[in-house]
Picture 1 (tube, rainbow, N blue to C red):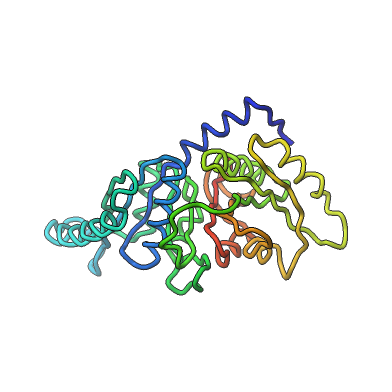
Picture 2 (cartoon, helix red, strand yellow; picture 1 turned 45 degrees about the horizontal axis):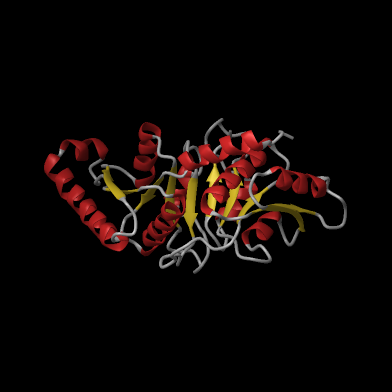
Length: 289
């Protein structure tokens, strides 16, 4: 387990400040308004500017044709700009905000290419329209970005719009892997910047010692922010516990990527997939270190 002295904690905090420069995907649906309000809340908490991106699509004749048809591109870009006008009105003067249109192409492809070329620090997206109210559930765009994009992805629960501040601890899922160690440091940086506490949570069979009981306490004790560590018993599945934690409602849940995905990219394992499909609070999925 890595040592975490005061110097290490400061470096981690500085790094997390940079990581929370945010881009929100916005298409003027109810779900994208959830993402926009979460982006505003996070930007205020971390004293960051917010970039709002609207994607205009290709047409049935194909991407190449659409890209060459300047009149058609101008028309669909104008629709995207109108959506950004809505976003500006919704944000008002709460934070500094930049806007960008992306396209023509699918939302997943354009946001992925944007992430590759512009390297935003994090992308905030809304849940599927089919999600239960108050729950996270990714649509196709989120699903695709959660398998390979090289920056953290933040998913807002359905119905998040209207929130005005972060309330509750930053919870991080821990299983002793290097990826979860990285997620813990990421969560600590978020907590340090936003004035939250950290809750390091492992899930294991309550009928026997898992070896994590002492680990999670040690991990929490080494952080330079107020933190607790605990092992919770399995209820139905590990994902079910993380998606609906007992006690104080988290401000967000941080999950690491799976250990066999590409380095420095988001790649979900089986537990994270299920958490992102059912959590009752915002979920942050961080790339592998």
